[in-house]
Image 1: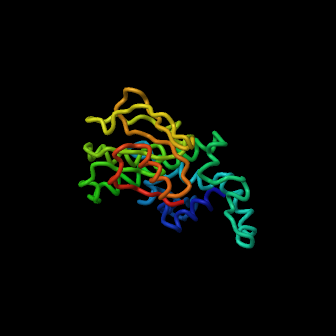
Image 2: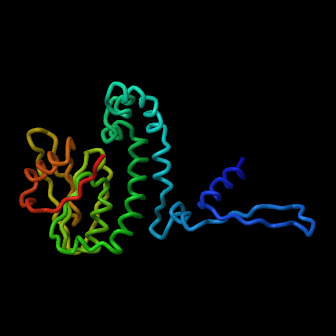
Length: 234
């Protein structure tokens, strides 16, 4: 069974495959498998990341269960994930600690690989002074950008259960001096930070739409007007 799986991967150029004869008569033939160029993305690299956690996330039971509601969603409307779990995919991790950890790990690994490649050739951040990442997760994207352009001040927006696990990113000079702010009256927003630590300021917000989210950002952080934004579409 394992050899069949390996042959399938080799036929799709995920692995390389060569043959080796045991003797001059050809008995003892065996296949030798190796890593093809694409395989490097599934082996831990120098940053300690790979695409394996993302594959584990996509194949997790939480996502696979949603497919059972696809037919009803097509016929009656709605989103398969919401119909099965009773909540949005971005809110569900806040209810399932195991899946939340799996989701964050998958996004962390994927984002690190993709953004490092983007920053090699993309120069669109050079003129920015402040950058807002709506749905920025653990802040990996902003950390990579501000590490290359330390004069950029980063603002990371996401849901409370995401930012709860977001690590501080010390930078020199500090992107934003951290301080705690009281939540707004609607209870949807509020600063979260590690007091006294120079890091990217994180703002927790219930994302009900990209424009609405950024509108709340403007009310929450003084001087955010004119900032450039990265919008992540679900």
